[in-house]
Amino acid sequence: MTTDILPVAAPAPHVPAPPSGQWTVADYEQLPPEAGRFELINGVLRMAPAPSPQHQAASLRFAYYLFLAVEVAGRGRVFTAPIDVELDSTTVVQPDVVVILHGGKAQITAQRIVGPPDLIVEVVSPGTASYDRREKRDRYAAAGVREYWIADPGHRVVELLTLEGSDYRAEHVYRGKAIIPSIVLSEWQTSTEQLFGDMAA
Image (cartoon, rainbow, N blue to C red):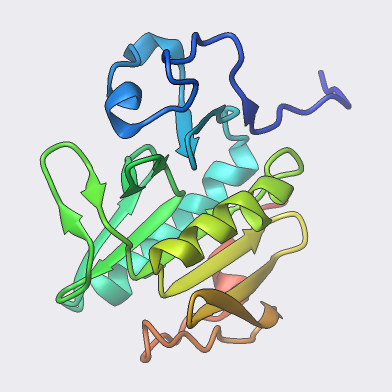
């Protein structure tokens, strides 16, 4: 059965806010696991919707090819959601795919990743597209995430954003046989269509 009503990434008013009214990383850590999957954006708690099969299929393929380019090549580590990334004292996100290169600013602790990863990939869906392109984009830029890929499996395209100063410069949108000209991964040779594969099912 299908529905025209889609879940969205939205504030979580059903979760009691801390006395100050603004959430911090310390408050976030007190959330029970059974409460659901949340992100903390600039002191606002947001509940993330469950990903769709199409979303998960795309996320897996991005992680696979990035794993080959990064971990197999001995350049760093690749992580997939759910994993907490603490960008500052009021922001904790769970990107779909996270790349941390050797010598980068992010630190891998026993609980989470702390600091800006070198590359973040977010796979958008109709319910999260504006969230990924506005709130998350702003926080990633402010934190110093060097490169941000916004992957749209519905249109089979990837938007490349590279950090310039304290904001992102939109490069281009890539599809088909085009290879994303990553600055972070200078030897990247995987075509965009390979990242999405056969997602017709």
